[in-house]
Length: 383
Image 1 (cartoon, one colour):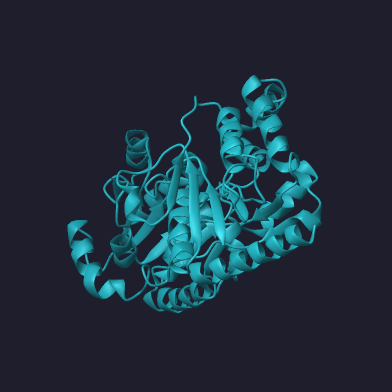
Image 2 (spheres, rainbow, N blue to C red; image 1 turned 90 degrees about the horizontal axis):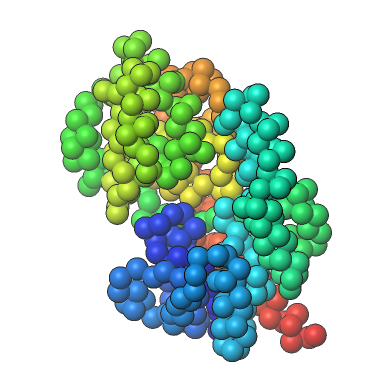
């Protein structure tokens, strides 16, 4: 098949959606498909991947990119166009970040209670929000594509916020590379990485992975960790990703978690940190279907997250880990982290997490999407 993938940036170092699209393109090529990538940004030397690259060089507004992408795509005669949330000319629309309106509502929970009604009223007329809602409506209704949700939570958000008919909604959960992320990695990387982080053998190392510290709940995690550290419990935290590190390093100090926390920034090979960790924690306020949680599961780590993470739908609370009802509840988070100081519980939950990841591999997701591509192609021919 001739397949078009549309994404703002085709660079695996920029975020989860970009990393997933990069891996997915590789798998499509390995299965013999002709892949065209339409994007603003490509990493240095992308030509190593046998993909046809189409750079869109237009000013920043979203509409400019969408219009330019439409002009290009109409000339390529592709069998299927799969858009990751950047444009509107597509057969399959899959915004990996989920539904903007639903995400925005969950972000309100980060504000003081008195400020939420004010922010909600302002959003009704502020140009940025008005333009974004109009753009989303164009994406959903201009060509009426199939809306692919990476979790049931996201599907319900689009139905509730934008009245997308259920017959136009499909759910395909994110997949994970279970060869790259594996408990086997511990044999080569665990001790070396723990020594580099000065983690003692008796200490439990928790891992947090995310770029938007505010949205991903690091502000809940640090007080929980600080309380544990002040109580003399043998805990450490490694934080991967993020941009406002100084601000959160200061927050860690204020809560007594400064000595127990290592802020590592973006790393090119996170596998070694999953191998070094004893548990994964992501108390997020919104995540459509966290790839980092799936990577942790594939690495055999017990998991702590919230019900606002679409990936939590793949978990059974108490089996692979714990699911918090409220991402602001630092005390509940502390209790679950304390439970995971038990090595036997970590092992049992980590094995269950790995089994869950093996049911949701990237190859399985690729099979589902190719089946969907074939369905759409047949429907188009019949029409």
